[in-house]
Image 1 (cartoon, rainbow, N blue to C red):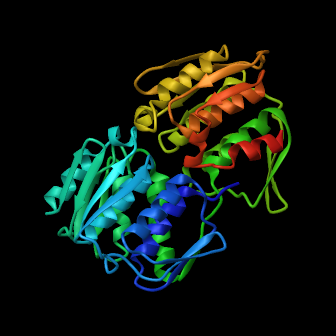
Image 2: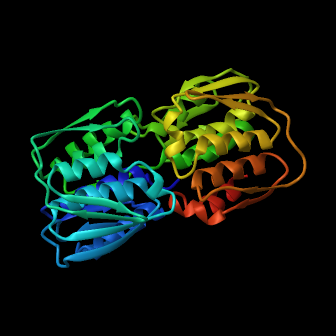
Image 3: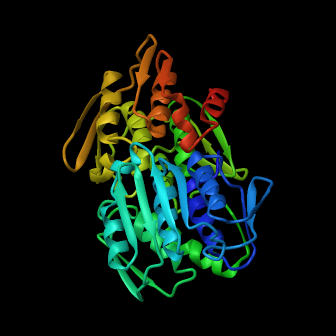
Length: 381
């Protein structure tokens, strides 16, 4: 399993702000992470690459050299939001080039905060213009109704700024907020950090194994700070998991349960759950799906369409997503085409493997989080 990009991007920002040499090990190859690394180098940070990790030699904002800097951030939410917030510590003007979908995702909260704090921020087409420095208050309240990433981004800055961040409407992604707080504690005490394995990535072969075959996952352990570790809790209800030999073993389930689950804290898990629950006999209800429309695509609509394309019933309203699962398989290959959304491509691949095969597009979307997905999944079946 690849390391977690959620941990990795937080670690890279904290490493960039550390006013001492700091080493981060076991970085993932996900484009969200490699894009952030490339941007950090452009703004002047010096990093020694070593064995899948980096050692920071200098820090931000002392490393600033250019007055006007252009940065390509891709489609990563944490990549862009963490970076844009960190840049408020500097004096230069930065233009962040956002991906096609990312520019449509929530930015109003951030722009409003920056301008109130005396900085400059505006969204012009696919360009987010950011310039500091801002006047950081002792206390700042940030609305988390649509995303917690801005609150987490400002919380990361507290490693150098004595600032208390108060998240408002923290109904979703509470575990990611807790992850940020835990990492701040560890960075204050240590000079190195190792990125844990990624539960979002693990969920795909775990789901496939739970329906089809035994698979062993070395080094994978439950993690209360990764929201998608909730899938471990779900699978334990089906008695198909065991912890042994330094990892997790999954085996095919032998019973059906109707599932009622709050996913507000683990929305990235919904495409995997779409596959998994579609093949468990019963009526399954996913609650807290309101922010699913703000992801790399309108995932609520796309996952529902995917489930229906394999002859399962799916319905949704403003707050719930309901799937009626059944065990029957469909013969014959299919061609699946999605928006440029890595999680849809990977969950669609599971459907194809489970049924009659076929092809999925755009296959290159997996680079965002799990570049080795096709290689790993094909070696397991």
